[in-house]
Amino acid sequence: MALIHYSTCPVCSSTSVKEFQVIPDYSVSKEIFSVWKCESCSFQFTQDIPDQESIGTYYQSADYISHNDTKKGIINTLYHWVRKYTLRSKSRLIVEVSGRKSGHLLDIGAGTGAFLHTMKHAGWQVTGLEPDAGARSIARDKYQLQLLEPDSLFRLESGRFDVISMWHVLEHVHALQEYVKTIVQLLKQDGRLIVAVPNYTSGDATYYQNFWAAYDVPRHLYHFSPASMRRLMELPGLQIEKTIPMWFDSFYVSMLSENYKNGKPNHVNAFLQGWKSNQKAMRDKEKASSLIYVMRKT
Ligand SMILES: [Zn+2]
Image 1 (tube, rainbow, N blue to C red):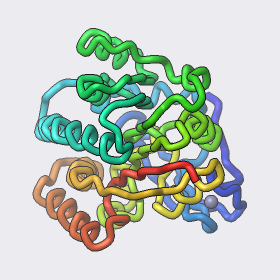
Image 2 (image 1 turned 30 degrees about the vertical axis):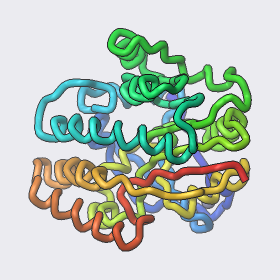
Image 3 (image 1 turned 180 degrees about the vertical axis):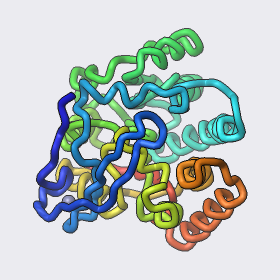
Image 4 (image 1 turned 60 degrees about the horizontal axis):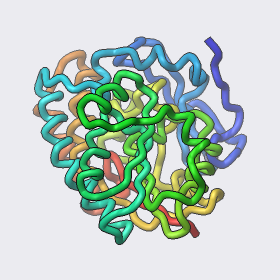
């Protein structure tokens, strides 16, 4: 297996990078990974990551629920209930930030296609990319959506999209800078990019530290703070127009984190920590467990 070692920060190229903490892959391989931090821009990244050809094995788990549709256990049940609510919120958000009732939407990491299906019904022209062949086939059978393989990104027409969305996807992509640059080219001049990622400066992250489930190494290659997101998007010519907290993520992530910390669920403390994290985010939204960044060209 080929590993990628960073000697400079993948966001700002600073050489002031060093090991910040050591975190196991709790959900799949149980291997130990090292998370490094940039002292210059505050970006964190998983060090010595498996390259694009070899990372696939770390996704092979029935527990990796973003790609399956089973309804077992309380976490899955809540996840599916929340997803329904979230779909409606996402749909409203697209209309609101684009100022359009219809247009061209590209969703990167479309999963089984539920979000694109919702948007298609709302009158949008949709294009979706998804690396997992199983998820693509569910999207085809369930929603008649022909999702494309991720490499298609580099063959799409420039300046075509009113909105490009990446819901918990940017933390998974190799060649970060190149990827963002390509996305900016695909956006119309007045288009919007929507990026949702976990926020390691959140209350739940601070509480759970290396048990925080949203570190999710090595699948999460990057761990963003709002400051490092700003820095990443500056160079290719994007500015953050607004940030929106994802209120359910604190509960979901806390439930998983309790499992990792104690080897068993503790829904009471998970709820408490999720609630506390949200209280903090109500005073300062950039402390939310996960953030949606809405960006436009500068
Ligand atoms: Zn940096």
